[in-house]
Amino acid sequence: MFIGEFKHTTDAKGRISIPSIFREDLGEIFYITRGLDKSLFVFTQKEWERLDEKIKSIPFTSTNGRLFTRFFYSGATKCSLDKSGRVLIPQNLREFAGIEKDTVLIGAGSRVEIWSESVWNDYYDTELNYEELAAHMEELGI
Image 1 (cartoon, one colour):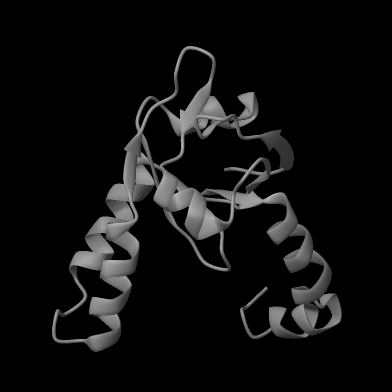
Image 2 (cartoon, helix red, strand yellow; image 1 turned 60 degrees about the vertical axis):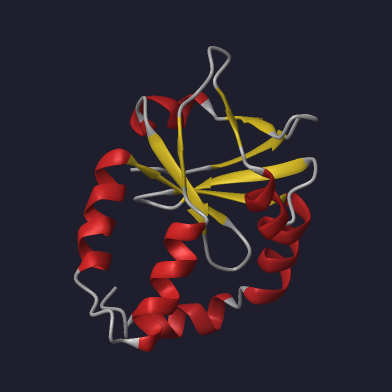
């Protein structure tokens, strides 16, 4: 399970250091793709394969299914860490998430999310209404 929040800097080549607490659980091969709310999602190989099976079961006749499938897979890249514990984030994904230099990596249970620090701060400050969220927790069964 991935938990925590960590600030890092993206270097000039687009590499970012993955926090050591995430490295072992990510494994040798992992996947980065477009996420939601202008973030990037990072999945372990096992979680990627689980999601892949679910997505493959979506009928191609479903318009929303095709839209999601294209969004999810077209931005995906298979990754590994270099010997310094960094990963290269492709330019198209950096552009999608607005990542220039300062980033925030958060643990989100089954995945890691990578955010531009400014996008994360805006999201955290304006999108999160804790009282409203708490009211919805019951609907989610929590």
